[in-house]
Image (cartoon, rainbow, N blue to C red; front, side, top):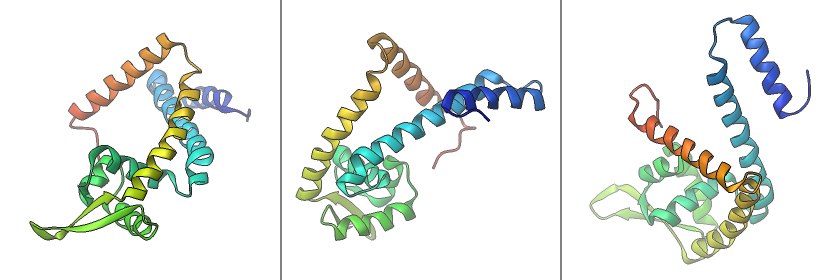
Length: 171
């Protein structure tokens, strides 16, 4: 088996085509490449930015969702961060203990928990997001401005279409 990202992808495409004639090679390549590139970027961001800041990729996603949207019901936080409600609940307890998140009850429904950033949570998120965005710029800098615009347009098209398809499973 060849080492490296692209050689594995090519071998995977070839082997799948040999073993299952008629597969949609282009569709397989799209999904395989999207997944592998996204995984590489997430690992890079988590290991160079988020772990040194003292939190996980999941913690960053929750903190970022709260920073963007403001205080939210825990279920809505799960949607915004792309996580399960159980994961948000467990993570919120950890982030609350660290002084980054506060949990309050919803005055309209005592069963509902509302999550929000503390002042420290906001400051830490903004500091960390600066480093995160610089790393994003490193990744984006691997493309020309035209390539980046094309990629962003194509990803936005896929994201919008996914919202309209009833066969697409969502969290």
